[in-house]
Image (cartoon, rainbow, N blue to C red; front, side, top):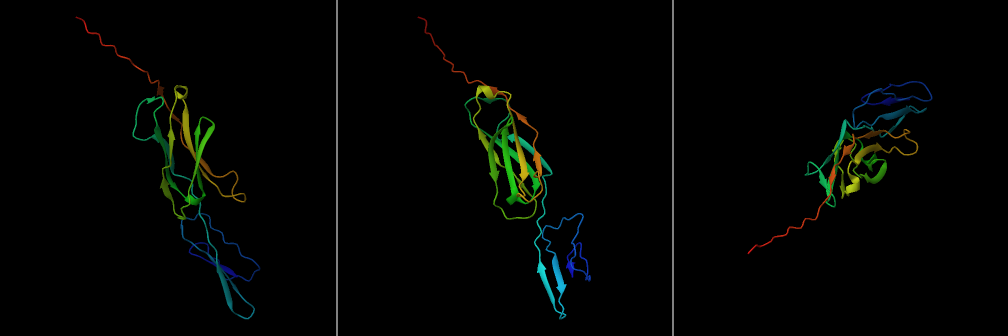
Length: 176
């Protein structure tokens, strides 16, 4: 019995079970093969899929196509920039204003390799939102049997400044 793989292969051992152990793995396509020699001298094997999980290298939050104070009642788009995370199918991006959850974004991409993603959130701030802090959180949902708590990285907060929209009336007087 043994494991055949690019990394962590064991060779044939006369035992009832063999553990495949790799301390650091960065091969996103590896498929170790477990093999066994049967009593009649034949050999059977089975490939085991491996999924590597990677938290982001960096995260940031920004306002798209805008700088400076916001005007109440105007629509703005926030963007969460997540660099090099894998796999996307396990990623849940959570948006918050303060501690209030706003939205969750999930992905169905089957790619196993690290990717950059930039989900967005539309907001229409009111004057009460002046000083509000928005943040996004990348969580790798590994299911109930996976690592608990789930691996999570949160952006630094984005504090917004909101100016009131004033209705201005201009009177023009004609003097004769």
